[in-house]
Image (cartoon, rainbow, N blue to C red; front, side, top):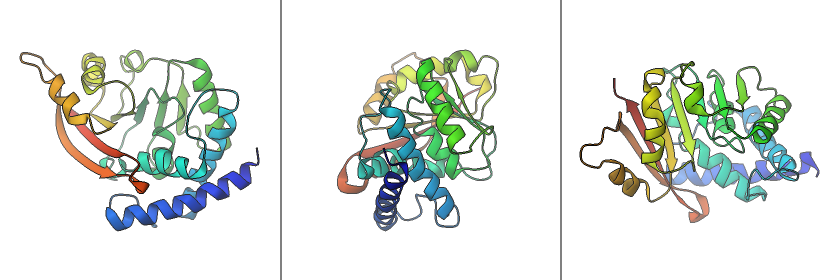
Length: 234
């Protein structure tokens, strides 16, 4: 494939999608000072590299420039305000797969270390190649390991996830290692509140409390996105 042509096509769609979001949800996405032309180009290039890797490995079902701009980049960055500049520490992308939302957030948050964690070795290796091509290393790492195993011995500030099981399943997974993390940020669909209610069964200890909730609709009315931010209970 022509990486440059695809990058340019995504960049056009990304500008349009950002403009749409800034009209409907002002202040939600990073502004031009926070995400300049070079970073936006990196985001578009990431999409091109992901499509190239997808030719030999199933990483994403979304491979058109508009879909990638909306469903991969904008959909990741709706969580941007959940990572205020005053916070530091590493971000762990749980079940990273095709590097979403970890790589878009890493580009938008250039001072934060980011760990892409996926138990499937081939996917982790593909993300390693993309990280190298985008010159994001060593700040951004791709690791073939289970998050709950890594968090036994490694501290992070925030665990972020998208499309990785239900709210209850994720909190159950992370509860035993919550002493090594501060927060959990989940990018969920419209069933988020039902999943949260199901997780709060009588007598069950979540180990986390909801600290913030963000709800938006993506451009083209493609999908409703709910961002749930949890803080770990000690």
